[in-house]
Each structure stands twice: as structure tokens, then as C-alpha cells.
Image: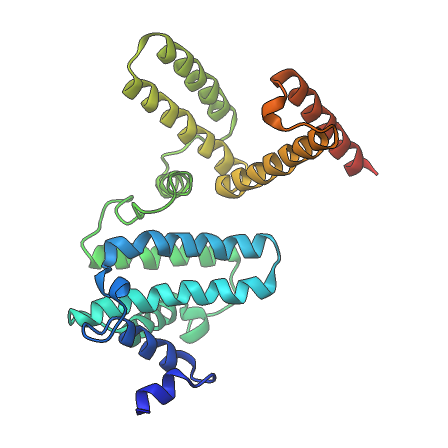
Length: 276
């Protein structure tokens, strides 16, 4: 057994073990054909998926699951770093060192000489000042330049709006934002009746964007809000299925009127339970 094999089979091998496993998986002669065929573009969707699974484990407070999900996400970073190393760009140590440098530079009140005696709001403002200087150094001078394209659409809308708000492009209160929701909803109805599918799609996008703005003004994470509603829908629909099954039926054996009545019953029971 080689020294590399010893490390791979060492249950206490830590990060060096994971890095060596990734290197071996990508070995063009002895590695895994699937891993060898991958590139940054094909792996990126898995990276996004693993990040969501981390968030899901946290939301479920499934702490044993979280350890595994964090490992899956860490493996994604190692995978990307290995592909970059093969091209001579950087390796996982460069990734870690750059992140460390960034955190030290962005926290002068912890790692430098600045005072820690400031509010969270002031620290946020200082953080944005430092990030603006970093963008300028990268020739990214536009206010919205570095809001990542790959973010989920609702989250990116929120970040774009927050960034614009910092330079004064924002409604000062929520009432005109709510008025805008009504306006965009009317435009969706009008578009449905007279416009092309592409134009209807654009109007739906406008409505979702302004709804994200409502969430921002109310200090609500729209992604978290929608995840919660998705979970509620799954829970309530599961109750509909269970009640139909108790009557010897499946959803496809039912109709909208019956299922809607069951939905209302489940919702009423949930609301009553919250009051007790």
C-alpha cells in the first residue's frame, strides 16, 4: 500500500485525506471516469444544490444531517479547487488563504487597530466601504457590478435592491411599494389578455421583483418566506391525501371541491392549534 493509500484509508486524515481523494478521483489514468469528465460548468449545479441542502438541514434543525451536508458542500469546494489546480490557476490552500486575507482585511476592529466599540449598523457600513474599495480595485465600479448572476432569482433581486438602496435609489417607506404591487398585478392581468407569452413572462418577473422589494422593506427574507410556504403546502396537501386515504380514495379519485374543502378544514385546524 502506498503512502497515498494510507492517507485515503485514514479515518482521521481530515482535509489532507479529502484533498488526496479528490486528486485520485480526477487522475486521468486511474481515476473515476465520471469525475474526470466534469468541468466547472457541470459541477456548479451540484454546488448550488448542496448549499440548499445545508440550509434545509438547518431549517429542520437536523444537526446530524448538517454534518454530512456541510461535508458535501466542502467537497464541492475541493472539487472546483482540484480542477483549477490541474490548470495551474490555484489550489485549495490558495482558496483558504485568500478567504483568510479577506476576513482579516474586512475586520480591522477584530484583527487590526480599530476599536470594537461601534454598533452593528456602523460595522455594516464599514463592511460595505471596504467591499466598495475591493470592487474598485477589481475595476468593478458600478453599484451592482458584483451581485452574482448565479444566485437564486429572488435572492438576487433582494441583493440588487439593497445595493441600489445604499445609494438612495429606494422608496423611503413601504406604502408606494405596496401600490406598485397592485399596479404590477393589474399589468399581469392585462398582459394575459393581449400580450405574447414573452411579454407575460416579463410582467410576471416585474411582479415578483416588486414582491421581493416588499419583503425587503418588511425585513423578510423572500427565499425563506417562500420555503416556509412550500413546506406548509406540502404539509397541508399531505393531510388531504391522508384524509382521502382514510375514505379509501386517492387525489385522482377526488375533485377540486372535495379537496378544497379538506384544505380549508386542515387550515382551520392548524389555526385553532396555534391559539391553544
